[in-house]
Length: 368
Ligand code: AMP
Image 1 (tube, rainbow, N blue to C red):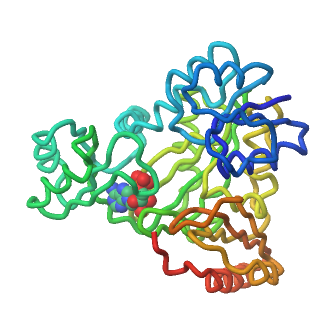
Image 2 (spheres, rainbow, N blue to C red):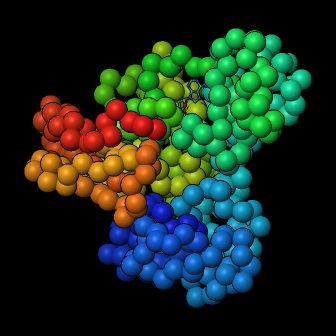
């Protein structure tokens, strides 16, 4: 089976590396050169909205998936007319517009921070009245890794915040005094079967994920079941096929939804070495219509993102529990260029090895 992937970054690279043993072949639509998927399949080197390239990309693939959510609507719908597109274009629309996403959480009765839509400067003042301060102003679209976001602490900051988002359609969200950030990665097959990885704990620096501890420890009772119910409700609502991540805030003992990623997710990278089946393999299985693999963790894992600069490979590889995953991307300050998974049966040994890996990272303090 030939799988067409919109996008050719590290997620596409890891999908191909996991899918090839299942007999899948890959074709990517990717305009950048070089790209992390170079050498892993055919590449149609063009923009995602290039009509002629979309024809070439579509011709001869059996199923289409994507590795990022900012695929133009028209492109996803064009492909959807002729081929199965997994997850469906509706999932892109849900996840890519924060207003739709929040409305979806409300409809599915999934708790989230209080919020208001903001179209104008006057709306912003009204939203601050309704939501209170501190709050976070986020552009509805094209926000990720903390981009397109500004924290508002005092009413004197409204003009500056509105300027910081360039007056774009946004939402204002109450600032959540969370205990920690968790996420759940789930997968849904073509037959509607679902499986969920254990909840993991994510550490961010300046809005960017730097580390995942898996499975999360000390999760409140019922939290795993609750998170599965929320993620499962979203997937069922969207008639989803593939891997989806739901980022959560733990507030006291409760879980509040933050955002959905309609694709394999950075907080699921640990599954490559720390779960029976990786999120990448499970995504490929799902889109190919194959049975899903076990999502059980095989021990404890820490995933350390490599941002901006690489540690010496030997410093990582001399750790017997560590696995190095490089994306073949040029180092640039703050750029995700690889990750290290440290996995093993003994949690203390995993934490100690992860600390040594972090210490070996030149970028540890983070220029992000
Ligand atoms: P997002 O792009 O919405 O996932 O936001 C990136 C990061 O900013 C999150 O992982 C949190 O660390 C932080 N953040 C986002 N929204 C809020 C909020 N309402 N309250 C507190 N922190 C937030």
